[in-house]
Image (cartoon, rainbow, N blue to C red; front, side):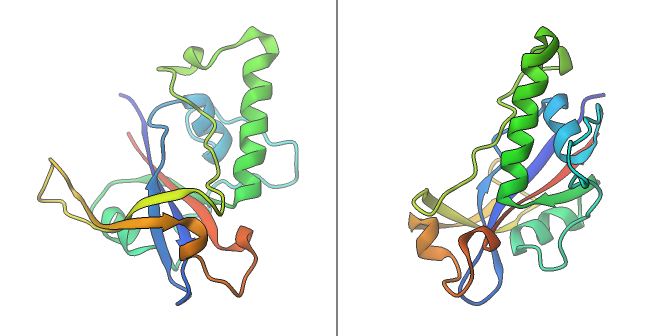
Length: 169
């Protein structure tokens, strides 16, 4: 049985709440899973702490709250932008060493995830999840602006964006 990743990039808006702005691009790359969450093929980090087993943040966005309450997700965690960048470096190192390719770990998907920057364009905000609609389950609001337009202005950018993920099997 396969294992898929589900995730949203979230930003902290001016109210202090978190808003989902983008789905995770990757769906199935076991090397990537092993790096960011220790799932399937754990890959050790070369720092003191990997971002594994954190669970969902207590202040998760409404989209994640709706999605995760009726799903059977496991190994939930969240990563800061520096952690995603470090995970990308580890991914590159792992795929470059031993002449390994991501395909060895299952169906190759683009493992490294680009961290949205202040000028990244946001097309919609994810407000919730409708389990009764398989065709378009995301409840969204059209948006035309950048990440910088959305984020809380009284905190550093790196504290106002995170990647939240969970896995199914």
